[in-house]
Image (tube, rainbow, N blue to C red; front, side):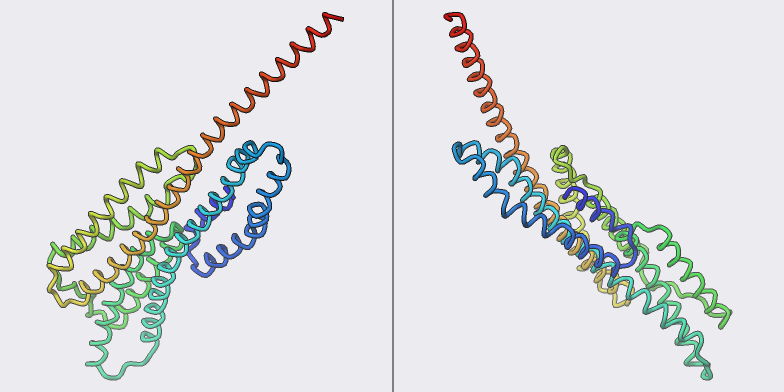
Length: 310
């Protein structure tokens, strides 16, 4: 199960959403049957093996079975987090590919009406800006640097083709104040950074304190970002498509991040419960072993005395 968790964590290196979904299904199908068998039948086997000592059976169930249950819960939670992010990646990737195909199709089409041509080519330049925004969002969800570089090169390629069609046409600057533009870029950057921080939090039972500290920090930063998004939304009366599009994307990304934070917090809660139970069970097991050692010493002493009497 620990290997499965690590494998799920590695999926953010995959740039293809479809392959991610396939990997998730494969991971679940590989481990689910064995996990279900161990969890469902393990308790019965332990209880049957220790019928004469129910308290010891309960301790062993906690040490072994409860840990399996918690690990399975963590896996299912991690799958949800991967799905949230993959669904968002799929949406952005589809938008990027659609714009790419639209521009390439338009470039290859004959243009006879100069007025229509100028209007349309300006729209294509505007779409290049949207593609650049999509790459920033994808970069927070996919750590495949080669795939990201390939997307950036595609924008350069399309821009060069548009420039050849109309050397006098240039990409227009958005009609947005520097303050609003700066706020949008800052929020987008912070969202991406928080998402990466969340994905890098260790899942080991040996790092509960570290996880608690990091998750609390991310929760606080997430709340600050929510307030920043609210202020940007309330102050922005600009009907500029660029602003409205970015606010919408930022809100969707924040909602996805918040869902991931909630899932990760649930994981931590499960780990904390597991650690607490293991500590208690370990204490009980130590006491049990101490009793056995004491009984063995008494038996040895009794045997020694009996031998001397002989």
